[in-house]
Length: 448
Image (cartoon, rainbow, N blue to C red):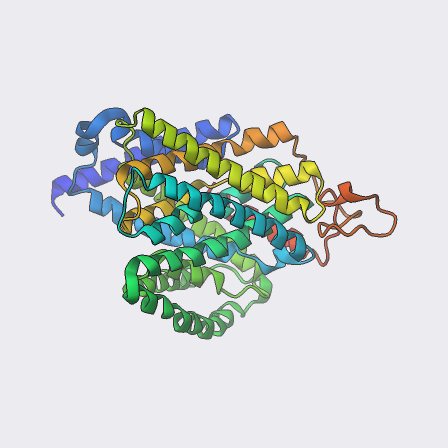
């Protein structure tokens, strides 16, 4: 690196953090998750507002790979946190309701998304038509688990029954989304891609074999074991090595980081795990704004004409209608009342950074061209920003977790009244769901 490159890199990072923090704080003041302001900062620093001249001077070609490297580290750690936040205890006592809502939240938008893909193929042709159709269906089906947890926390919903159900549903949708994205990459890679995906099975077996070693490293000191630099370094090294392994297999590095987080030990290390989430979240909060800018530099809305606006309207209609309608129907099928079903539907429409990561993979695979990528990024921004106003419009209620009444499963206990009780009250058995919700909310604080 030359001295000039070092100067520009340091100035760029300072500018990115300053603008991201400023717009993130502004977003929070108007009731939006800070990630909305941070994504907007990335778009504003791109060519859309100031053109190529300013973008090329601020972020010249010889500095962009350095920023991209930092961004990749941030995304890898973000995906590790997403995997680590997945908590099987979220399903305790609400498995049936979770599966019902998750099926509706995934299948309906995916089906509408495949139809959307056929419409988009007219102006965005690709040789990988099958992979494109599946990818577009997937891209309108995702939910941003960490941003959702932050929204629940900020609106006082994190310890309610509907908040726990939302987190559990989002966790299931996340697992399905990342698994499906691996399938898309396999389809895009042809015969070689299928073999590479097959390698994930023995690789997951290796991680499972490493899991007892990690548990042994965490075990001394019991549940109150302090988080030392050695433990934190061990965890981050493991996440990065796992990410590097899947990248070497020909799969995206996000899969390795996610798998390592998902397979981390949970039992008996709750406090330590929360500390890891907090510390790793602090690191990603510094690196992810760089990713937003790297993504924003690829967003160019200057050439969007009437046809582009029409496409955006259709994309937004499918994304919002499919996600909201599918989740609502899935929740109602499990006897949740209308307000709680609408609340869950609004929450599951949150896409945030998760959508940006998936769109970035689609761009790398050549499934999205520049104009479609730009429109999809704006869709992710709009759907995330509309979650708060939708919740206010619905009248979603916050407050402490209920201790009596009907369970979220929709089966009323003795003396409970009818259908409307589902989701409004639910017993917490062994504090399992409540603990899981609290952990997810705290771990996502720096990500939202």
